[in-house]
Length: 215
Image (tube, rainbow, N blue to C red; front, side):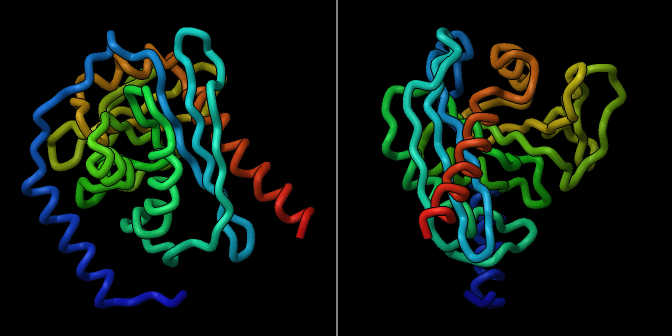
């Protein structure tokens, strides 16, 4: 599929419009967290695999998992990842029930237009969501040993985390989550890159390998 400049300009304007009008009436209660869903994508050639995992926080194990192999619905465009990964991720996540928080391998409001993939998925699903990314798109990092805030034009929009023996990652609200709730939520998830997201990452890569072998 080729890029379409008119379509991209429309979706950039849509991001800005939603960002101006987005109002969150309900907020996540961390004490209510029991089950979470994580979602990630992997690529090989012209194919993508999306994996979604339902994870029990109490038992620390997978409750259910789903994968999908497809062609990306749109080329990669910096800042518009939701066009590429949003539709297949949404289709998978909607198949799960009884969960309280969505973890997305992407940014939330820690995004040039404050409208990363985690914002769109949470908004469309009307469920709490957090974006967790391995690289920073925008912002300045506060100094710290294990974690610190990330500021954009003087406003804290997310946090960086560097657990001992692990790589740094960045967490920011997607939907129904406040910035100041991020450290508590990450602590509940184990104060490291969440195991549920690691599972989704491995599952998406495995799905591609298995599909390639069968082709």
